[in-house]
Length: 580
Picture 1 (cartoon, rainbow, N blue to C red):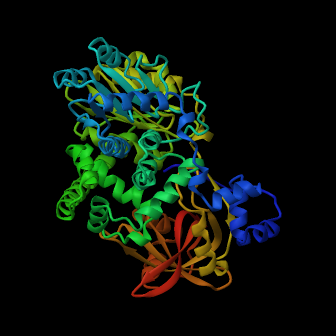
Picture 2 (picture 1 turned 30 degrees about the vertical axis):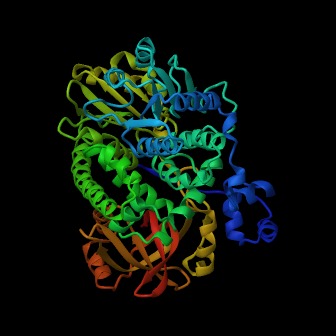
Picture 3 (picture 1 turned 90 degrees about the horizontal axis):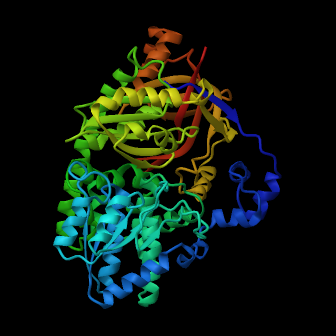
């Protein structure tokens, strides 16, 4: 398990005055200051995200050029083909552009590469197929920024190539007719953290403006899903997109999205960013992992309720299978990571030849969370080895792959995540190079948890919890407020969940206030640690509701539990330390 260092934020401000000016509680004011928000204008923009805060699309480099080329192609009845990607961002981007261009009366279709057969992004075979189908223009979304060879081949064969992407820039850009990517150095767009669907949405905005089509904001419910699932920072414009998109989703009439929520037993009015990232998104993702991502686009395009219900059930079934396969893969990866050969590695490179290649990124993410080491999981593909990596804040995976590119056939991605391919005989040299180049220290592997406020259980109120909702949506860049307390006695302990994988506790603070708590982490490890500190007899007493000795320090988030129309306060334990 990763080591943790808990630190209390100690930012100074007149919280009482700040709370009074903005009509909020002092605890909420403290959280805003902890996030660097001190100016009244910043606080108001954060508390009340509004579409007026979105940036005009024309400031994005090549966006109007791309729009104008598309308008000309539509007028000339030229065939346009969208080339997307098989993850949620790619599926949503493809749907947005297809729906918008169809609305503009374009002759347009789409293709999403098969994860196993084609790999990531546009390739030569896809370009050849476009030529055979007499396609005039290829429009990429969520990919294409590294497609130098493919673009050159397409141009040689007379195709128009328009690239929309958001990934990190390679050393050499493709010589396309236009490239829309806010990360370009000479791009004046003021926000570079959009996902692929966010970039696509901006293009749709510009198209709808010139065609005088209203209702472009309806696409934000889809863009919000992609933004959360691609783990983009929920700051600035992304905060507006997700906030507005969630409001749309809570009252959506969209057949596909309604069906997907229904099969997952989600009440739309209670929808949050959590549901997008951990329930709805994974269902859309599962199609590209275990079947065809085209099913995801088909669901988003579906307007028939019966058909949407059938498609949603298929997606959920695929995701259930994916979860079982992921659990098995994680178990295998942990055994490998804890082997003698890997114990000293700073960068974990784990080869799971029998693992489904589409699960490599998920498994890498789970191990990154467990050990807080950059992790790359490799799997056996058709002709070579494919891999997916997840990183930590102090390690730019994309930059580190650049340093080792001589071992790779292909790679791309972000500082926090990347994909790659290589020959099997290059695995060990690649692993050695990654670790020899790695400058991370032991301190970098310690998870630093910054606590917003120390608050006793007796200080939690329903009104305070309800007010915290104005800080949502939570996610990367806007994490949940972090509370902490110490000296909490465990009075009762039970295991809950389908496979008793969670721990439910009744805890008591130093003022005698008792409250339910739930820990969604590794309950087996939790029990082992309790037994190690306090012995089996005391743990038995806890299960009987007679706990006396065990004491915890916890980092938690307060919540309101609703059961049989009754509400009660509880805390969700995020981290714990057993007090000796």
